[in-house]
Image (cartoon, rainbow, N blue to C red; front, side, top):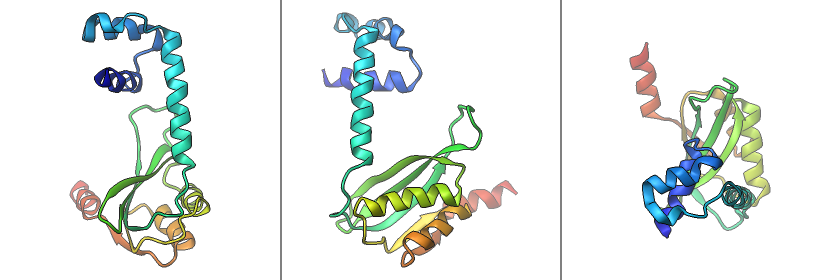
Length: 167
């Protein structure tokens, strides 16, 4: 069922171990969960990783983004306090919002952002967005100026307001 297909990755992302899936799903959906072994969950995880890798390598040659929002997202999991997800959301020239990139980064360093932005360019994204919106982290702005020098910069008012109120 579609709802079960959506529930399995959600449970995985919430930290339910593959050996506990059948018990967790049985409590939620009943008999539909029979036969969902740890091996099945492992196969599904492998498929999701492949889908994610295909998405990360997709051709961007036909894409044209007018705006980008960029941010580094830190999780509560403290395996390494410098690790974050670098996220870019774009709006196409037709007004559609899309997830452009999600990559691991070292804090929000210039090197991490430059690697992400260079990867987008290498996959065919030759048209720079007209405007990028981001927080005050300097790494993104420095990398953007080097990889897409024609893109205008705008500081995110939500981040700016939060920073002012935090002082």
